[in-house]
Amino acid sequence: MSAVVVEALTWIGTPYVHQAATKGAGCDCLGLIRGIWRHLHGDEPQAMPRYTPDWDEVQGHDVLWAAARAHLRPVAGNLQPGQVLLFRMREGAVAKHLGVLSAGGDHPRFIHAYSRHGVLESPLSAPWARRIVARFDFQEG
Image 1: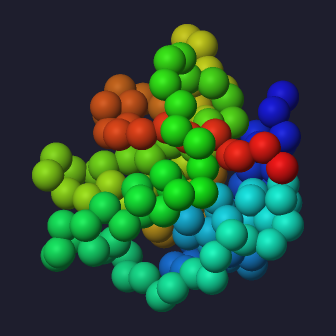
Image 2: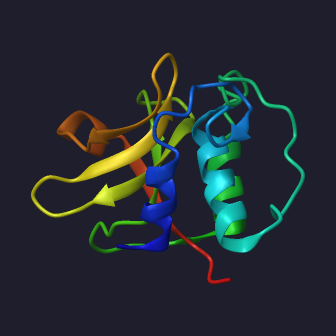
Image 3: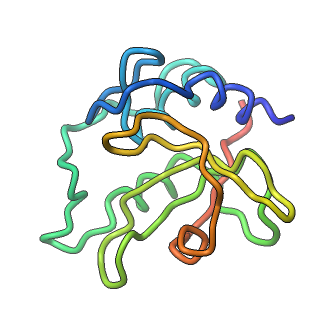
């Protein structure tokens, strides 16, 4: 099992807290990815600016996608456990949700921090899968 998935699993049950990134205390979807980064690499690559839950929808800028491209490695091909998934929740909206693929194959699953639910593992059902707009791997340490 990939080190990314192993670490992501330890975050399950962490409450959802917007802008937080502390295992067991609270995180949002970005906070989960930030926490995994710290576990794998140490310090985060940049200071985190304040952000709103809408992720710049009003201006239409894909801020989260740009940050993922800057600090993670884009991947193509088959889904592989450990990949970071970027989701666009509505057609025409900015991409604003992240998760980690925890299982591939016939029954794919992903770990994510979801408002009002906290960090959980969910099936990568067809409605979720069609919302994926990009996939990334963590850079090698």
